[in-house]
Image 1 (cartoon, rainbow, N blue to C red):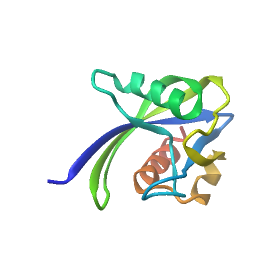
Image 2: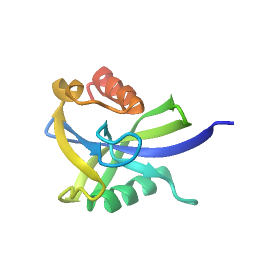
Image 3: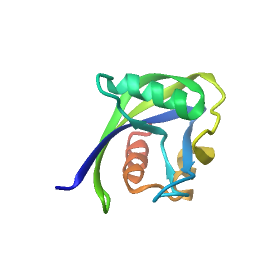
Image 4: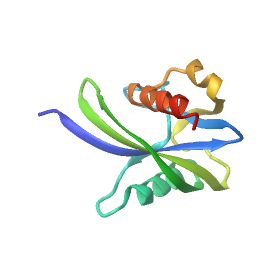
Length: 130
């Protein structure tokens, strides 16, 4: 059976732009994604998201609303990604694990090479005008 991975992702927005990060490591190096990560046992999705963003970006966020859940098959695993609209509360988005980051307006979202699951999130953002 194919490995299953369940993660959470933060779609942070500010002034009509969305925060995207570029992976600096691994199989999907250089692809863009919405930041986040895996839940720890006993954590809620929201708690995991706040912890991951604190660990990866040295930033505290507020989880505002559920956006979408994406199911995506990658060559070696199946990904379930729960995405939430979030707001930066404090911190300066320090890149600890990513090689680059950008605030992208809705009209700029197609200018970067997104990971397959994140392509679906971008579609949802555009559809909702979130």
